[in-house]
Image (cartoon, rainbow, N blue to C red; front, side):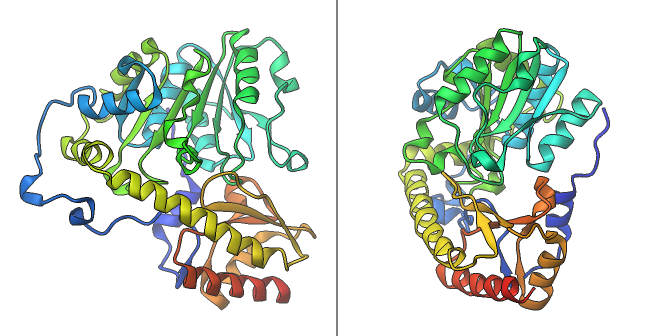
Length: 362
């Protein structure tokens, strides 16, 4: 198994700090444990969490309305995607990835399959929604479809009818769906929604990173059929053996023992809605660009109508105006960029004014 460099992560992790940064697709993290209602002296550092801390797993299962055996806690959605795809690839060789896609999906599929993944298009003409009857899937070949819902970078959400139709088509050939659902909780009641319940050939991943802003805890979960979850847990034995108990306990405290998790969730949704309106207020005055209104999340895809390459624009935006966005090429969109808007309102408006000037003068 060979892992290639993930360009977007290498860039994000090594770039110097920008005065205005619109790259983070997750909410800002609470500053310290006291913000989560935790006293250090009261924090246990060990306990029984060999295959998930049971109270946390049981809570998540209850929220989703699934059996405890159909969910497991792990170190974030990225590790979850790796473990789940590794297990599913033992059943089916062909991996298909949506297009455009979040770069790590492509690199992951390439590493596990050892070859360039097949692609399933999301067309801008259809606002990046999936075709519920994709011609690609009609050839009778078993395959695993790896995708994000809501889609990254557009934030477009596929309704259950579309996913169910695609899952049925895949199942008829012995195929599977692996869906990254990290942005789903931004939706109203999304914290209780997982498409793993739709069909028995769907596996999903989620985490505390995006909506709750708890990226540093590295807590995620995987949902799916019991036998698949069992195999995923044994695969994780070869990766990190056991989760840090302390992070699972903190997650349990935030999500179950207090209302802090709910407060973070509601605050994130409020900011997402309010700030999207502000972003649209500015973009609607720019005839040079088009954008896709996201259904969920705090990011959207902005494209240049004249098809100009985004490289020069993004570089100039940062060097001349101090505003950083994510170049669309990291999402296979050469003529656009992804902008996130989870920052404070003053910073958001200042950055949007700079983007407006940069677009009009480029």
